Length: 92
Image (cartoon, rainbow, N blue to C red; front, side, top):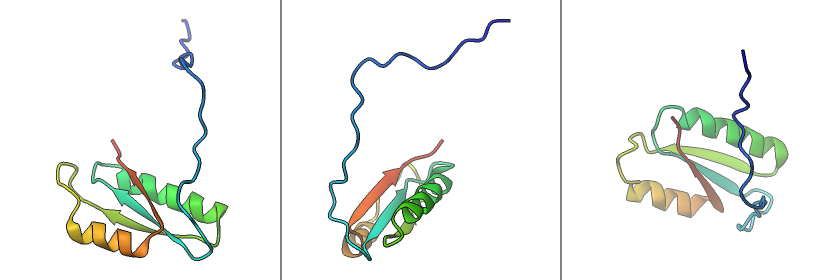
């Protein structure tokens, strides 16, 4: 039996992500799931990690519910009115 390591070689440099939003104490980060199976659960974990890392931030989850549908105007308006940043994600 031979073990095959599924990790590949990096083809380029690693770039760290910088926060581009202005986040202050009390800021809310939107979590927007697209409706694929697992997207809500994944974003719940992300939200918990964000709140553990930055206790002065809160998160709120939205779920589009249908991966093939567009985001509703109502959801987008609520997110832009109440959040300083948004993390959009999908599951599978």
